[in-house]
Structures are given as structure tokens and as C-alpha cells.
Length: 439
Image 1: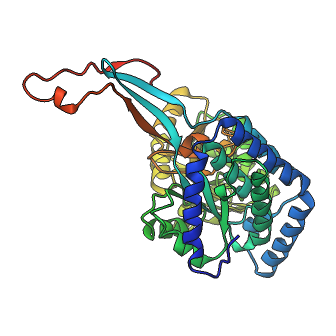
Image 2: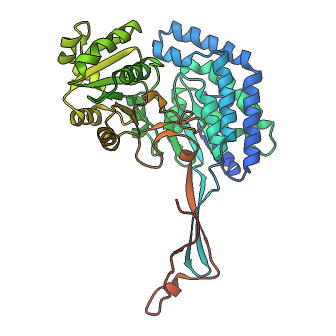
């Protein structure tokens, strides 16, 4: 890795990444998969070195009073490290998203237009806390033919350094695959420099707070893909099965509260609230969940603290939940669209008509019916892994896996045609005849 103290380092990395991306775009699927297998082996065989580096990071995080939610994401164990290697192998087993024929059209006889998927180019990925994001993002980018420049949080610096070093060494063992497919920067100053590399970096993927993502968007000309906050909702409809609703609410909140797809606000229909809220609150309290609620909620469960207005717009990533009683589906949808982050929201009901209205009217990347918000994940969606979760409405949305890391190009094959032949009084007509696969 280059010396991060030099201001030219990031621009040099960007140039190297661009060259690596052009080389990656030419590689066969077999060669990319061999590199991924080498990366997985490097993680598996160097488990102790990774855990030792992570131990240093945890000591630093505790000394710096890093929030518990971030420490939870930071901590590694043998199972998680093994999962990193397995995650890389799962990406290797997926079909190559680049070079796929999307459509074929005959514009005229002997003039054929093809649309084919291709890599985006160079990805700048900025994230915090989670060292397992390093192999996830690196494997997805390499498989899709993209080079990546990584920037992790300071609290995970030792873990990230070891992981990137291992991955680069593993890539270097496969002839023809450029080591500069994976690079890493370390400082905030380097992030600022990276944001100015629009000539070489094609897409930024920030994973962090709302303020952080907005900062990235406002300080770079490079397109940004990502989500800021995961303010996810659950709505328990009057037609819900109470046992099912309790189980889903507990899973969505407590299975892993630090995740961005954990439920932060629970909306409950006024007709079912008296039957379910006392029972659900008791079970949430047993799991040490701090509850805040609207006045109507507190009338049913007096132990619940009063919710503030800002609670409806807060991502806790911790054992805390806001609860609000609503008059019905319309109010629930209105609340979610006003206060949600467009990430993931669920409805619990046995009423198909209201469920379908919820799925159609809630403006989020993932919407669930009788399923926990925690399912909104690249691995669980069968994407192998994810580079991030996008709340955008362009290019890619929701968990972004391999398909979100390719774009397409048009290939026009002619036999000497000129535009002049198709212009003027005696112009030839286009046939525009579909010949092959369509998207």
C-alpha cells in the first residue's frame, strides 16, 4: 500500500484502479473465480492473524467509547471469519453478471444492435465498523469485473489492513488478475481526495449515517449509490395473527438490533392494540428493549416512556423501539412514507387485500408481508453478498449484489451502412425487429 501521508496517493490509486478495471473487464469468468477461491483460502488459513488484528481494534474502540452498536458490528470471532471465506466462495458460485446478452434488434438487414452487460469500472466503497464488509465488497467487485478502493472506519483499521493485505496477496497468486483490483485508503483526508477523482472513479458506495452520506453526495461529482439510514417499520394490521405478529416483531427488533434492516418503529392498528401490545411489550422488556410510545400506547402499557417527535425519525441500531397506535392502513402507510428511509418495511396481516395495498403503496426498496425486515439482505436474497443497500430509484435498489455492479453497453454490427441512407426523401426505413433476448 502507498504512503497515506502523501496527497498524491489517492490519485495514484485511482489511476491504478482504472487500469485494473480495464484489465478485469477482459477476464474470463473462470479466471475471476480462481482469484476468488484464492481469496477465500487466504482468509481461512490466516484466521488467527485476522482475529488478533480485530482484538486490537476492539481494545481501541472500547478505549475511545465507540457506541455499543458499532462495537457489535466490529467484533469478529472464528465463526464470522469462516463466514467471510464462505461468502467469497458463494460469490464465486454465482453466474458472472458481465457479458450477458440482454437484447438483440435488427435495425435493418445487416445492421444488428446488441445490448450487453459490462462492469461499471472503479468503485469507491466507504463504510464503518464491519471488517466483514472488506471481503464482501471485494469479492462482489472482482466477480463483476470492477476494481474497488475501500475505506473503512478508524475503529476497524487493523482488521481492514490485514484483510486487504491478504486479499491482495491472494489475487497476486493468480496470473492475469491485477492486484490493484483491491486497494484501501485509511484517512479522512484521503476520502476528501477520493471524492475528487471523478476522472477515474465511476461510482461511490457510502455506508454510514445520514449526515455522512449527504456529505459524500454534496462533495463529489461522482455518482453515489447507497442508503443513509435504516428507519424500518413494522405495521400490525387488525387482521394479524397475534402469535405471528409477536414473533415477527421480536425478530425484526431483537435478532440483531445493530443491523440497518432492524425495525425501529412499530405501528399497531387501534383495534388489535389492546390485545397485542401488553403481551408484546412484556416480551420486549424481557429482552431488555427500551420502549417509547405515543400517548395511546402508554395508556395500554404505562411502563412505556413517552415518545418524542424526533423518535419517529431516529435509527437506533440498538435495543430501543418506538411504538405508535394508528387508525388503519392509510395512516400507517402515510406515516411510513413520511418518516421512513425507503429501506425496508413490513406488514403483518392475514388480509390479502390490505397486504397488497401496503406492498404497493409503501415507497421502500424492500416491503414484506408476514416476514421479518431482517430478511432484507444480499445473502438472504440469494445475491451472494451485498456491497450495500440502496434506497435510490436509479440503476440499483435494495440490497446491491452482482447485478447492481454492472451496467450495459450497445454493440452495433453493420455492413457498411451510413446514416445518409436513412435520411431525406428516398430514405430507407428501419425494420426495428427484435431478434433475441429482451430485458
